Length: 403
Ligand code: ARG
Image (cartoon, rainbow, N blue to C red):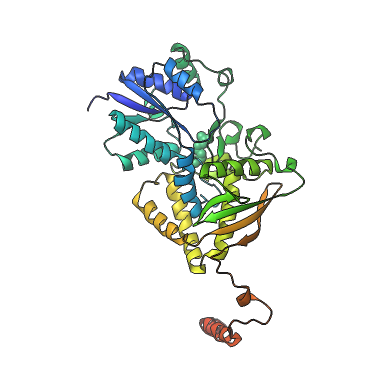
């Protein structure tokens, strides 16, 4: 085995990755480069630099990836209306391949042969990181300390920190905290009392949405503009992808939109319970379906809906950088050529509902559908024949059953 000379670590500056940083330096006796991505998690990232410096890191990378995250990962996923198991908007799942991409990029730049991450051995995130690294650069080794070291309990983790003089914030000293993952798309919370699915989640787990009960009594109206399947404006104001999602998070959060209490099936095999808050994403999904409803052909729309669960599962399971995901993406992207126009929604006490939609590329024909006399040539007798032929096999089937 070749000796590892340099490792790029995905570093949040939190307790776990601070311990991992120390452990890597000790175990491998080599230089560790830290990489911290700003995905809109809302933490002060300059504090991360100070922490890394204190741990003796020379090469500290803190990169603002908010625009790339929303433009190249969240929006392509949104074009598919992707939901895992019918409900989860994949907020953590879609962030991992982006982080992995940059870990690999930095590793290649600095000549590191390994990257490391702080995902545990029980979750989905380890798969997402590692499958992405495999797909992007098979020569790079992945180090997953949580699967390698002898630390088996929270007590041992705190002891290790103590021993190596890694500061433990007071709120991390007692029992294990919630496991939280936040970015511009969502906040996800797992662990502690949430591990009992029979127990109601306490109010304080919610971070970016108000309880719908406490939301304003007056509804708020918002209009989202789409171009070729991607949202580009809110209330007529054109925005960058990251600014648009940030704005909708605020709007949805105030109205209690996008809360989800879910038991899901992890790829690794177990069921887990989590609380998700995806205010902007929920608004965008509803709006996107609204604009598709007038701009997509029926068969195109139904085909998209058929492949959607498969596509969502690929993202959930960590196969973003896999040929089959890219093939499905090509299909989805092609479907979006005419998905342009505006959708107006009403936000009210936890709901985001479409109330109107317009498009220069609309397929909707009032003339065709109207109950009134219509100018368009539509022969009612055609419907009679259409029904007669569709009913042919049903009449044979029913007659046989009666015999
Ligand atoms: N269960 C979610 C997923 O697999 C979230 C995982 C990360 N979240 C967390 N709170 N640690 O996508």
